[in-house]
Length: 546
Ligand code: J2J
Image 1 (cartoon, rainbow, N blue to C red):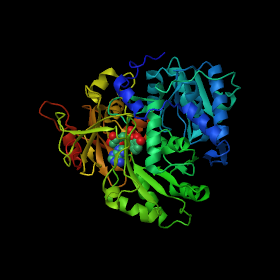
Image 2 (cartoon, rainbow, N blue to C red):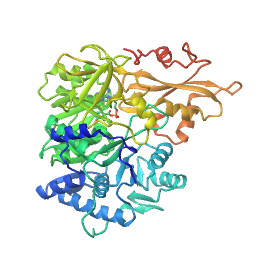
Image 3 (tube, helix red, strand yellow):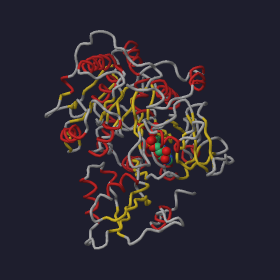
Image 4 (cartoon, rainbow, N blue to C red):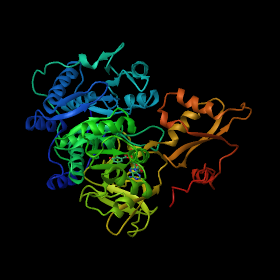
């Protein structure tokens, strides 16, 4: 069972009352939302999974599948409040599974398809998950074998459900059954799911989001982006990531009664024919993909004329690249600067081009509180750089079961320390200038150096390691591991370190792009490794202090 406010810190009563009075929190739940949409427009297409054969779900079908799957989960002993790690790529089963879990009040824990043994075992054990949902094969990788290893390593994990051929596990297709009555579902103020944080520490922290708060961020995002029943949203990035899920994302599109189309791979050769065939109106991209799409659009034979809006975010989008997107794709650009912890900023449809290409927008809500502060938490004047702190109706007050980390990541009065260095323009738009947190942003994919360092340190020849970001034209940043070998350890090649990390079972995007062997790290005055000096040694402008 969960203890509210202990497992997941929550908003003080006076804030909750304020957010309800303002109409932000409306007492909706995800299960109820889908039911209402299914009643309002049962035969409208909610979901399209185009590959390998095109499958569609009307709102009524999605609603009924969620009910039957929820009943099947209950019959197998999955209860309200239980955690279920969901690792599915962009397939229709993703929506069926999470809406089934929402309906009974069990909490999906979102894993990315790229996650491997280390991450999955951590998510399962730190949430005491009772079940794990995987695809059979994805991108050539057998997730059933991963699931078997994790099940053997994590006591308490009772079920593995497989979308597709189940192998030794249970086929998701065998789970649904007839509901015996209405579900005893969750309350709107209760947790809906656990989302992943980008992470700055050895193990990633989980983000507890409630029905009330997340649904508000969807409603606000839909309004800003003009999402409505006619929207046809293409999910290009992994569906489990907070950006394609909620900004406005596939959940935002479903909230508005639109149609969601799942893109199996993000490259133009896959996405452009889908845009043409499915008459896609909206999508979201990370900057490196936006670059590739912009280039490919100038020479494509596919009809992209249905596209109205492309959102770009997750990492800094260069002004030059931003200027080229609208003419190339023939649609509007919106920059989005968001985080799974909550706060999301958008440029607006009626902003002028300069604002859209040079800023990362402004918050969704009038009740998003923004502070830009110096190292001593004193507010700096508008136009000056500082640390971004935020508090509001859809920003968490603490991570899942992490009281010690929460004392550092939040101020005493509940502001989240984003770790981002920003500047606020006179018009109130935020410009992201850098980062104070120890994180690498690899084209929108976040890496916690400490997590990678811990893996490299397991190599018998390694004495010490420091992982830092280096600038990259395409990805924005890549990772570089400086390695000090043990005295007497034989010569090693970079590829041997990379292979070691990969074989330890960690997401491929976390494997260091570059490995350099050094004799010593630059030291600070107190004898601690200076990542700052390491970064400048690597030729990067120091992101810690603009
Ligand atoms: C610079 N840095 C950015 C941007 C995020 C919408 C969009 C993105 C995310 C996301 C999200 C940036 N320019 N436009 O959840 O709903 C960096 C910041 C931020 C961190 C959050 C959404 N957009 N960033 O990227 O939780 O450093 O969420 O604090 O993965 O990404 O990462 P994440």
